[in-house]
Image 1 (cartoon, helix red, strand yellow):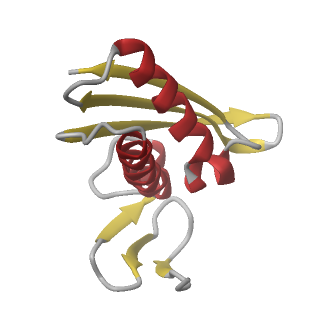
Image 2: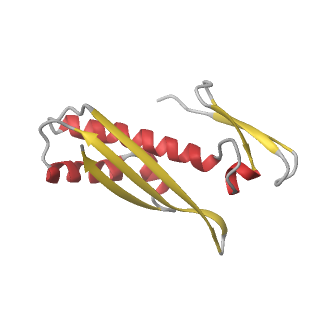
Length: 142
């Protein structure tokens, strides 16, 4: 399997500095700053990138689980909300809320929920993050 990489460059001090984040092949590139990370400033931040990675990974894992069970999804749309909180250990990602809507012909609600839960547990990004952060799932059938 290939090794994936991304890079970041930061210039200046923590609160007044700024930087850029870029995925290895340049598909995603963005500016980030103290304000975009800890306030509501323009630009991206590491937590948004984690959220994007988790939403993408889960959507693929769920689509695979559905197809393996005989249900070809028309679409799976997922939002991941990463909670960055101040704890005794410092700023910490404490929880990630996955919210997904699947348009899946022929699947019943019970099977849909079962497959969504299995995808959450099996998604590589969930497995990476779950030891340190609670991961919730709200799965809805379109």
